[in-house]
Length: 220
Image 1: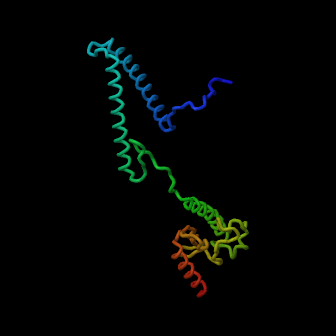
Image 2: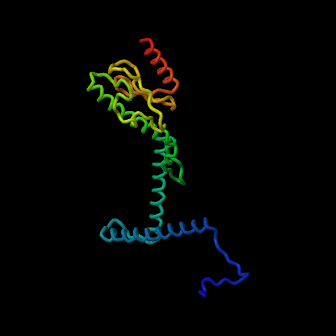
Image 3: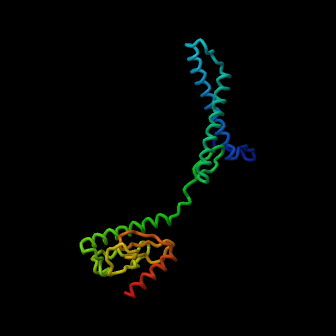
């Protein structure tokens, strides 16, 4: 059996906890970096001083002190930059030790992405309706079935088997009248107007607007 795996019963075993081991490793790493950097500074400075009459050669202790001083100055500058970024964009940065880092984009709601998908789907239907009106003297389809479009373009995004509300018999014009509307299942309802524009309304306003539009159609 390998001697590395031999353990004597009752013998105490001293070891550090994982966090302390990680800190010790970090301190050891930075200590090595500082020592190596000091050597490089010493060699570079003395090489430059050998060809200059104004600079004197450094000793290793002086090179070590100079390296640590530059490091501290760099930390101060980086801290000031981080603080300035936090002042310019409040709430966008979070403190991470002595500096700041950008917060994860955890508050970007999936609702926004879904709304963009809903709008893109409605824009495809908008384009098809506009092309239809161009070839039919500005008149829109008499009904969903009469449009000849694939039924999938009339189905609301995220709501299977539920169609958009279509106001048939309309003609292209500048009136603020709805042509196609989502069902008021969302906080923000998207509509296509008869002039081809896409409008977004809050649900309560959309319900009132659609109700008034239907009442006007009945009076005609």
